[in-house]
Image (cartoon, rainbow, N blue to C red; front, side, top):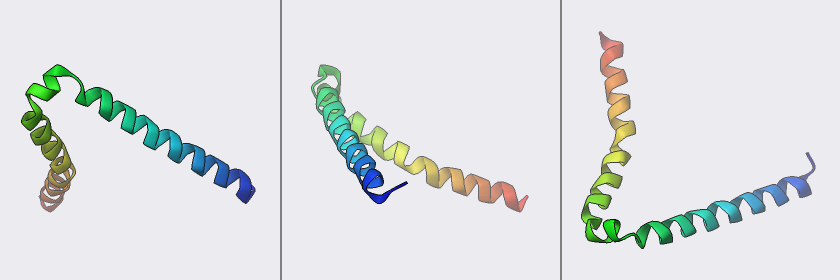
Length: 65
């Protein structure tokens, strides 16, 4: 693949990714249920962020047995 085509795909993909996530975040943030329970949304994000760590710990424990 030529560099100019690769660069075009990278820039297009980045713009679509950022624009899509901003739009989804805006729409999600305007939901009444999310606004009323925002602390639960934050706790959910933190909980999901720890899942890979817990998965790696679980694999390490299983590998020792």
